[in-house]
View (cartoon, one colour):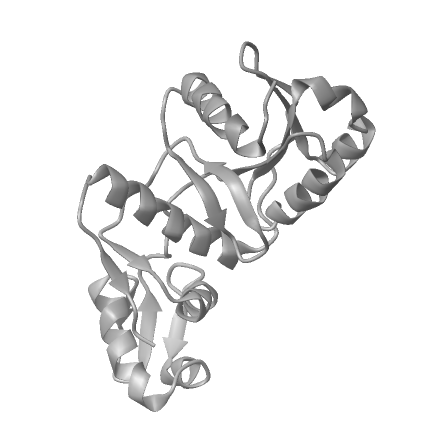
Length: 221
C-alpha cells in the first residue's frame, strides 16, 4: 500500500480538496504541541495584518474581548511596559479595535476576528494508531476537529470506541479509496489563543504561497 507515512499526505490532500472543493491546507505545521501532518480549513477571512507575537495576541484577546468594553490606562500598564503602551494603543486605534473616549479611557470598537472560522487537523500514521491517537488528542487544543488517518490495511486494529469516546475522527487511507470512518463532532478549541495564533500562521503561509496579497505582521513587543 504505502511505504512511508509521507506517501499518504498527497492522497489525503486530494481527498479533502475534492470533498470541500478547495485547497486551503498546510503540511507539517508546527503547533507548539507537535507537528501536524495536515491542517486545513474551508475558508479564510483575510486581513491586511497578522500577529506574529503570541504574547501580544494573548493580551489582545483578553483585553479586547467584547464590544463597548471600557478600558483604562491601568489595563495597559498591567500588561505592557511603559515604553510599549503608546505604540500599542496607537496600533489598536489604527486597526479600529479601540477608540479613545477620554485621555484616560478607551472603548472596544471591534473584537479581533480570527483569520479562519474552522480549523481541522490530521495526524497520519501507517500503522501506529495509538501514537497517532495521542497526537490527535493534542490537536484538539487548537482544532475544531482532529483526525487520525491510517493506512486502510491496518484500520482493523484501531480501537474505534476509544476514538469515539474522545471525539477523534478516523480516516482510512488508500490510493483507490479514502474515506472517513469516524466523523467527530465539531467542538470549540480548548485554547483560544492557540487557535488564533496558529490561524495567523496558517493564513500567512497560504497567502504568501498563493501570492494573493501582501500583509504586514504586527511585531510591537
